Length: 420
Ligand SMILES: NC(=O)C1=CN([C@@H]2O[C@H](COP(=O)(O)OP(=O)(O)OC[C@H]3O[C@@H](n4cnc5c(N)ncnc54)[C@H](O)[C@@H]3O)[C@@H](O)[C@H]2O)C=CC1
Ligand SMILES: O=C(O)CCC(=O)C(=O)O
Image 1 (cartoon, rainbow, N blue to C red):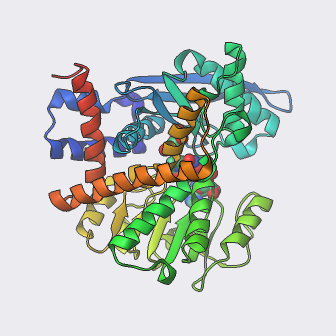
Image 2 (cartoon, rainbow, N blue to C red):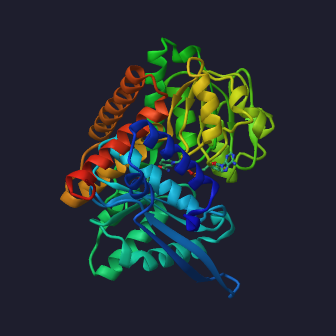
Image 3 (cartoon, helix red, strand yellow):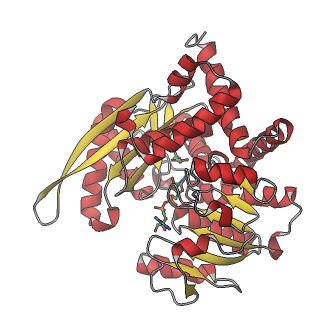
């Protein structure tokens, strides 16, 4: 489908083809399962601080509506395109189904570098995005959440804009919002904590000990920083590499991750951090380590570097970090590299978003230990299901994870009479 032409959508399509072949799906079913139900493209005009009018392009893609509302984050990034958003929405569908959440996948995005906007401009853009989406979203149709480049403040502006339109507070329209307006404890940290939990499970399977391990984390935002902190201070791992969009660092005897976090918070990025050596970002990914965590953008593990990775565990915290060509190389290296596929690895975020939505709908809130307990229970079930299927069917973890997700969506569509 040309409207989605984009490298990320090509990845989502190829990954689905592999699963559809494995599940022996009929050609008509393949078409209907893969292509998104709905795609919304909007133009977002805002007044810049200098008085000029600037327009941005915004998107929301709702992948399928068979199991309940759609769910997924909104990304603010200069690389956002309709095709990328469609790929991210598709991955959300398999992720929600794998973890048993009653959602189809969705994703939104605005093609913008949020760092180039003042706070007032960012607020105008966020509010305008939500205004344009009002006819298409709702607590029972499509529930918005955070993704790269958006945060609790943006979610609060979304919630306020929707609520002002309705005439009453509607916290359950978005997740990842501040606790003061109906957000849940633990959502900000949920994705990273989930990654740490799953790395611990993989170490356990491999009979490795965290305190003897090293880790490299690409991306130092919400997901990357929380993951690096957890691996270092909860598990006692030596974090030897970190990076963001501006700089990459390596230090064989371990980086002080707290100092890096403090530096990034004060300076807006890791650029200029002096407590480790700078390294070429591409080189960072192929340094020896026990755990490699891509936690930034799509397509960073490629045909070029997949054969050179020197990690024992690849924990895909980002969405779509591994291209299908790289996947084929990793399949051959399956006994060298334990892959925790993205739809499992980063599912902690949407799981706690689901808890936030449920709490909002019932106006009854849980404490942090209840949230974390429930989160780890769901992750445990998903991890066990994926590794069991992989072991029994002798298929890679990604194929097992996606197959479980695709089968559940298919079963829902069949039960509703959408397929023979
Ligand atoms: N925020 C969430 O709850 C969830 C996020 N994810 C995924 O995790 C990834 C990261 O998202 P967040 O941490 O929320 O975003 P964020 O906006 O908080 O941080 C992104 C980080 O990645 C860095 N980055 C961007 N391009 C990079 C590059 N080419 N090389 C190295 N670093 C780069 C940025 O400088 C920043 O440090 C994305 O793939 C996102 O879709 C997945 C599930 C949930
Ligand atoms: O919490 C949410 O709804 C967003 C999660 C998300 O965008 C993701 O898992 O990629």
